[in-house]
Length: 357
Ligand SMILES: Cc1ncc(COP(=O)(O)O)c(C=O)c1O
Image (tube, rainbow, N blue to C red; front, side, top):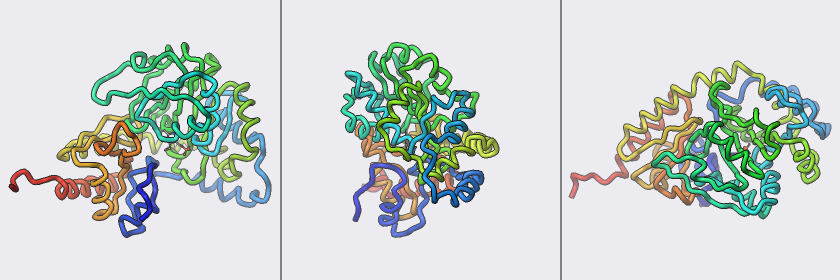
């Protein structure tokens, strides 16, 4: 038996536990409507070019990302997923004496910071009460995640700006920000010119359902990005990913479809989860929900896999959450209903019956 994974989306492990290759995957927070047809068409059109190295300057890709965000291409650094970019961002954080990190936190922050020698100060988020960021975080370098994985919490720009103004280096991972329509996003991208100490990370993995392609980008001051370029290998983004990135950000039809689907689907799933005994979902702004559970999430995860081939994300890899929480992606109406039906049955099996002595 292979060991329980620490990331969502490990279908090899799940298939082995479920005894089935068909898995209803709620563990990785991926848009159920993708990948967009525009991405597949771009991949097909780019296949003949695989006999060449990618453009080491990624001119077309950087130009498209820059245009999308109203920036100069010199402020754009494409990467092999946001995970690769965390490696380079952590090297900048390592120049500072301490980096405050809100916990629970995405596990890859620890990997990147340990590798770079950046000292992390965990700042525990109180899940049961509202906290002001200025009370939670000291004046230091910051590694932030907005909206926050795994809680789905969204911090308003107005709350972030005073902290950024006082910090020597701020990395903000906005991997899930694109799930909010432009009018509701709390992105720091418009403030890059004002704060040279600011780095914003974006990912195409979640919104465009392309975790296997590997594409993300950093937006930051050109001097910082010039230093990053000297450290990394010359063709970190493959040709197919670069071709997709050059077109997909302008796919308005796909974006609109996602923005229309998510709020009602998330609300319906939230209500369904809140109606189940022993479960307390947290309101979230992204395409996933964190759920507190009276039954151990490890037991629940195994039961769901073995009886309904449903994979939820246990939170054992977030030490602050342990086995009292799990996270689920918001998916299509039919899939969400399958999850709720499976959860109902599993909870009945796993909850001791108070009437039986
Ligand atoms: C908050 C957060 N940032 C970044 C990533 C990694 O994104 P990518 O696939 O672009 O490396 C993840 C993946 O789970 C994530 O949850």
